[in-house]
Image (tube, rainbow, N blue to C red):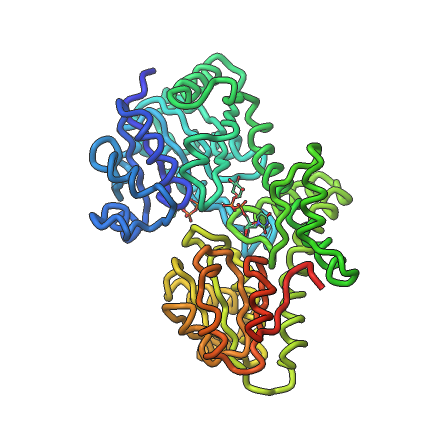
Length: 473
Ligand code: UDX
Ligand code: ADP
């Protein structure tokens, strides 16, 4: 088989950037990224590159070079499927909100509907590549759906697992220079051939020793385990931050000392208000679910703790704010949230700690003023509506809480007349704010709760602020 056209179903945070880099590195192949959302496809096709639906440093430059040359964005899913020899599935796989495995297992509705469509419209052999994060043994399920829905039984589908390891905010660099590329495939002759075709594509820019081929189940599990290990490191250091606050040890000093042990390594040891993002929680929940499914209760409990500590960390910050400002005593207060994205350099806010913290503040009647440099106002309101609707059944309640939420267009406007600022995202621009004028515009006493430890504490104290830093007494 010769690969001339590749289609990617799902034009989100993974599909868009991944196909852009593929298009840049494989100029002889056409890449068609399709999505059911017309709005999203229109945004990817917007001539104003600042209006792309995904913000990633370096992305718009690549789009400028490739779009409408060998990279196309379209809503014509069937046409793209028919044309392509290889199809990437890059659709969302949220945690189930109902049915068996509710709150734990991955919701495979989107993956299944995608597979069904591929089965129905395919008129030649295809290689189907799982890109979305999926539970172990999903490939089996995909194959079953593809074959059930294909009327021409002569058509063969090869399934590969090629999990994405990009992190948002550094996606382009991660795609250009990944630590490894993982391709899981069947051990049959046609499975090996399909694997080799994908290996050849990656070899155009990635050294072959970094391209790892495994069986399909190892590949699927490795993705979950990688994310679980990374999240575990964050929860580990966050658990230690609570000890630091009690004992007088300093989390940054502890983290540095521990990370200098080359067996441990220094990355992912930055204490924070809690990890967010679309993957960590979802993947650990998947791991917990699989462990329980196979009767491995102790293993399930072990990984569940990583999520529990993460919730504990965000709740701990909420409690500190309540105690410092005496918030539970009915006194009306305004609090400013700086940063809504789950980390800097992305406009993604999925599972951001700021959402959960804001929900708790709104619940006790606090006026919350939010500023984020990249997350749009309607997204912030949407996140809050969703979190109230998911966790509370009373819709009326939701509307009442939203009244106390304001989204402003600068850190200065959001902090004005507030009693406290809570830094939830480590955006660089927060480091260079004019803290003197912020102090002057705030209620007194003025608090800064630095949930990312990015502002010089000494400077803030000198200006008159009261401060709280994670892991510092
Ligand atoms: C993660 C994985 O890193 C990536 O390989 C996978 O493909 C997708 O999931 P992502 O969620 O985009 O990527 O971001 P990541 O950099 O891993 O950060 C996740 C969360 O952990 C963020 O909220 C971040 O602020 C937090 N974090 C990270 C910390 O709190 N401390 C750290 O030391 C590192
Ligand atoms: P990720 O972070 O995994 O990329 P996103 O939610 O950003 O997740 O993107 C997933 C995309 O997949 C969304 O834009 C959604 O509209 C799209 N999608 C979901 N199901 C289908 C489908 N059956 N066909 C085409 N696109 C789909």
